[in-house]
Length: 402
Image (cartoon, rainbow, N blue to C red; front, top):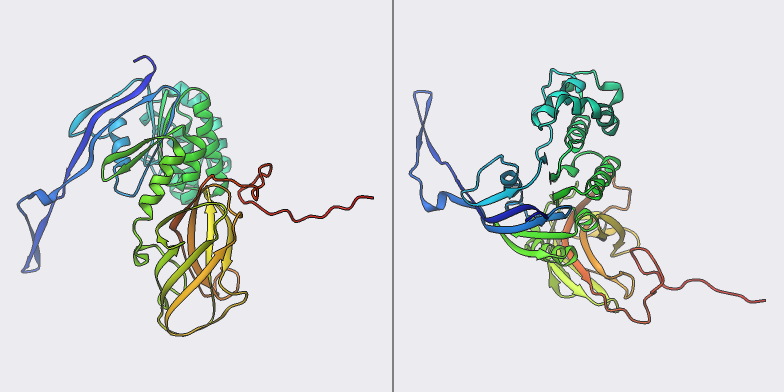
């Protein structure tokens, strides 16, 4: 028991969906409650059990609504489980809903002291870390300005910095790295890495599979409130990506761009499979994109982007230069030669544009994380064993001996 930081046994959490019926009459609104039925009961968590050792970094991943945030709120004592028990052995720091408790009329300095107290920090402890908190948040010039005048990025950077500098044995982190620019997110990840190196236990919820892979020693995958996998990060991330790719209806995906009303993408197949595909390095990777063009577009080319660990490796197009797309159904095929992608899990984005840079005035459409592709680790003599990097580039040089 001495090496256990967290022990969860049979955790379940039930919520009741409240429903009302509104009746209008004589310009007044009257609400009457509808009788509760079994359909109004939702189990956010169901029979979740696991242990976390001291000094371990545990990643928790799953689709939206799978119970990740509910689990952390139970461990942080924000909410109680309906059934089961959660034992936490040590002082807990929570980075859930960062910024809760900030008062808009108070300055940044005053809010550091207020928020630190709410997080359980003593006054002397806050004062000792105040300079480091301000420096990490990069708001030195504005520390004595009321936070109501902060930008949203400044606000969230300060909130993260306060919570991250709390001295605790256990740190609960819930997708706060979605805030801030790329530079600040990198600083946040580095700080979380230092938390683990100092022997702190970290529970990290994120949709960033690259961060999960780099930070975590173990992964829990949640689906519909239950644990479907508990083990090594690579395999857990693979199961998560396969689960995410299970929704193959592209109309449910988050497309953006100026051409959303003109192009309807309906399906993407990777080597004949939708959502998730696994290939060997020596295979061609063939993408088949289908859909409908709702009106003629005078200049356009389709694209497939390949990313790994949150980094886009490259984008390939169906044609060299944009050409017209006629109104009606379309079928686009794009292929990647063998031995380009190294073993590992990749995410796929699809879209297209008119040939210009993605900027205001250009016509484009795009969506990230449409599907996932796992390149298996079955190497052959065609792979560069000694090479490094995220892609495998063939030998391209020449040598002359004199």
